[in-house]
Length: 280
Image (cartoon, rainbow, N blue to C red; front, side, top):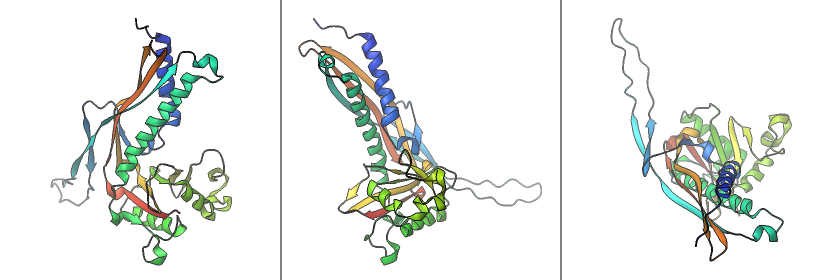
C-alpha cells in the first residue's frame, strides 16, 4: 500500500522551492515587463506607438493622437524539473537533502526563465547591433568603451526613455572588459557607491543597471550582449513555480516534480540594442 506523504513535508518543500526560486533563480525576470496568473495558453501585451501633440483653433476640437496599438501575443509553455529524495539519505549525510533538491529545482527553473527571455532577445534584427565602430562595423573586439557609447547613442536616437528602467546584460568576459575601463571601475569617475568591486556583481552606469550573465548566446566566437528598456521585452507566467511530491514505497523515496508555465516575447524592438563582442 502506498504511504501517504506527510503534509508538513509537502508544505515545507513547496515553500523552500518557491523561496529558492525567488532568491537564486531567474536574474532577468525582474528586468522585463511581466504578467502573472495568466489564464490560457497565451496572453497579449500591447505595444503602444508614439503620440504627437498639435495645436487647435479656438473653440475647435482637441486633435486626436491616433496612437497605434499593436497586440503582441506571448505563448506559454510548461516546464518540469524533478528528482528523487531517498528516505534515509538525510541520516547518512550531513546535508539537508530536501534543501539540496529544492535549490537544484529552483536553479533549473530559473535558468529556463532566463532562457525564454534570452531566446526572444536573440531574434533582434541586425540593424540594431552595436559593433566595432573603429574598423568599419566588424566583430574584432570585445566590449569596448566605444561600443558602449555607440549603443548608448542608438538607444537615445530611438527615444528609449532614460527613466532608470534600462538594463544591460553582458557575459562575464565582457564584465571583465568593463573593469578595465576607468569610467566604469574607477572611483574618480563613478564614486565609491557605484564601484563594481563590492558585493554582488551588478552596478548602475550610464543610467542603466549592468549585470553579468552566463547564459547569453555565443555564436562561434561572438557573445551577444543586450541593452534594453524594461518595456521592450515581455514575460508571462500562467503558473509560478510549484511542486508535486509523491511517495514511492518500492523505492523508499519521494519523487519531487517542480513545474511552471511561462513564456517570453519581444514587444518593442526599438527599445533594444545588441552589442556583439568577440570572445575567444
